[in-house]
Image (tube, rainbow, N blue to C red; front, top):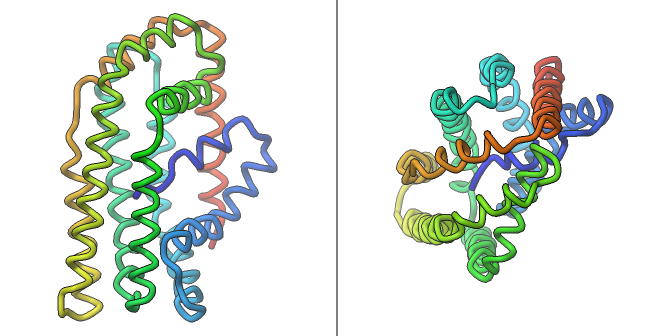
Length: 256
């Protein structure tokens, strides 16, 4: 379960008013994302609303750290390794902090809510398992176009040559999600306090997020794509990174 970076990507390319509105409503969006999985009662929702606002205010240090990194991004093969590694570490820190918030509310679920949560995860995994390989490749191309504009035939071919790799990564991700869900079930069966249960959930998330099998192929694909980017695609990417900085700067201005 991620912090939905694609939600941010979906906002790129919009005007200032939309980006500012997105930053202003970040708490509502986050609450909605959590409640899609955790069917909370009214009192729990009220508490979550306060905790989400606190979380967003507390994470501003990450935005301040991310902005200069985003500013310094260059589409240069020689600099990809360092930039990729730094962004990965920054994302994982944020993901772990979010996991702590998620764990608190997972630990508060009663037996009915636990069952509902398990069904949501099972449905998500089932949908992921049923997805066709061609559809997954189409999604990868769409994400490329979000960042760089229209993809060229040559770039499609590069991605296609790595289809087997993408399929293997899909299988690994699905397997890890299923194992994580099984671990959640075991934690719910444990006779422990809500506080201890929250800690166990957080440990499960931490293990899931910090033991993800890295593969040099990710960087190889990026490095093979960079030389094929046209001036127009590079301009689109620059516009997108500027959009992202705008969103983060608006976020820093807001007191949730």
